[in-house]
Image (cartoon, rainbow, N blue to C red):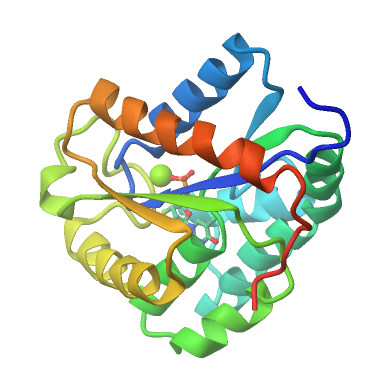
Length: 211
Ligand code: FDM
Ligand code: MG
């Protein structure tokens, strides 16, 4: 690793069971195997006090108004910003399973206003790359564990997918869209090559904020 260079903030986004966890783990393992410091994270980060409330909500043991849970998801990102920033500045690449865009997609899919949903995300660290694993939700229902948590219903995921598509078209070139139905190894190879091109480029660039 080059001294003085920051790490990259890399995000995986997509509907439930689209392969985000698998791909983010493969990416971290690959980087580490090449001696590039990288660490995995995921949102919601369920271990903090706020994270525990979010977990109770997702596992249906607690109900909350849509606006309240939306802001808790956002707060859960804000409470980890210093941790992420510090790691990036110390040269570690942070690979995150879900971020602000899941926050907007799932809440807007319930009917909350898109701009209202995005507002609390402004000022968070802007990712250097977002890997969007896209697939028709009906193609994902037969994957393992689908159906156990609050949002894992095909009809709802269809609405989430539409919001992700909108965000992807609005956010521009740091978003990379993939066909999530492709074999795991093919996706990994494509993601790895984009990442390896990205890391040396962002190393000397200042962090930006979502605006
Ligand atoms: N989710 C996740 C949201 O609704 N808002 C958010 O800001 C985030 C980060 O939480 F259904 C939803 C998406 C998903 C659920 O996520 C749990 P995982 O990745 O399946 O654990
Ligand atoms: Mg899930």
